[in-house]
Every structure is written in structure tokens, then in C-alpha cells.
Image 1: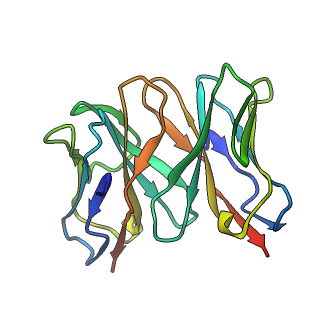
Image 2 (image 1 turned 180 degrees about the vertical axis):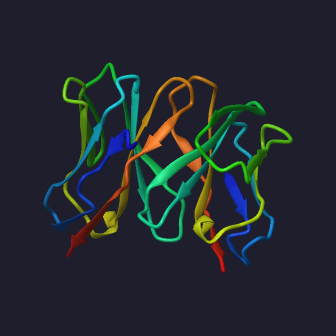
Image 3 (image 1 turned 90 degrees about the horizontal axis):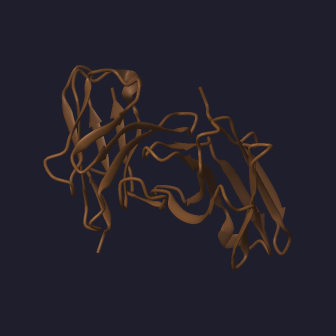
Length: 111
Length: 114
């Protein structure tokens, strides 16, 4: 029962262009959403988050959009850089410390 | 200064053995987690502890038993290891009990059961 879904296992983008990573969720009890970035042989590291009371949060090149009615969020990276190449995990939390992850999307940014 | 540290980083063992993975966080966080990343790269929650108290216990075989001696440690014991237990296990911690903050992850422990 995957409550958080990332339907694109991989994404390839040219350097300087926009990367858009998508995430869908099914549990309406989730009220906080996070994106994590993971390099090989390392643990995931926090990237950006958004509360369910907002529809957008921006941090430098990274912007997360939340569409609650569609139960959909997306991460935009503009402009994309080769160092952004990693696996990106979408995560969702409810207030009982239950944090669920998507399967991840491998982003490759080509120089 | 490692915030969340797991040991060992690699663990190769035979079927039927009992093994433990240790996790420690020096962030003063109240909540700790164990996640399993399976062969399809899914990060699935196994357990969550808040102030040494078990909060979440997913459908995990009872061969897996978490132990939290204090709120800075959450160790994972696995009895009678099976081939299907081979995976990367991640420990994580987060601040507060019901606060929505990010979690900090350890580097992972790659368990290989042969």
C-alpha cells in the first residue's frame, strides 16, 4: 500500500533547464511534505518542505508546489546543475510521526 | 561530528544468524526511526520511537525488534536472518513529538544475507 507515489523512476534534464519532479499521495491525513535528496552510499538529506496550509515554498533554486485537492506536489529545480544529479525522494508526514516515502526519482542533469 | 551514526556500515552474514545494527543521534531529537530500502529502492518505515516509546510498528516480521535504551539510541536486532532481509537499513531522527520537521538520516547499513 504505497501512500506516496513517484511515478517517474528517472528524469534526464539538460544543465540550465528546469527539472520537475512529481509526487502523488493518497492519505488525506498527511499535513506536511518534504523532499529529500540522496547520493549513492549516503543517507537521504533534507532539501525542502511544505506545510499543507501553503501551496508554495521557495528556497533558492528549489521550489515545492502543493495541490491539496489533487493530492499532488512537485519539486522544481531552476536552473538545474550537474551537482543536482541524485535520487529525490518525496515524503509525507502525519502528526503521529508516521513519515512515508515515495520510491524516488533519479535525476540526471547533463552538462 | 556525525549527527546520526549507524554501525556497521556493511554487514554480511549467513542465514539463521542473529545480528544487530546500532544507531545513535547526537542532535537531542526525541523521535527516531528505522527504514528499510528494498531492492526496488522503496524507503519503507519499520519503526518509530518517541522518547523511548514505540509509536509506529509497521507490518514487520517479529524477528525484527527495536531497542531504545535511551532517546539518543535506537538499535535494531534481527533474529534468524533470511535472504529476503538483505537490504539497506536507514536510521533517522527528528525533533519533537508532533512537530513537523525534517528527519536526519544515517548513512545506512547494507545488510547482505548469504
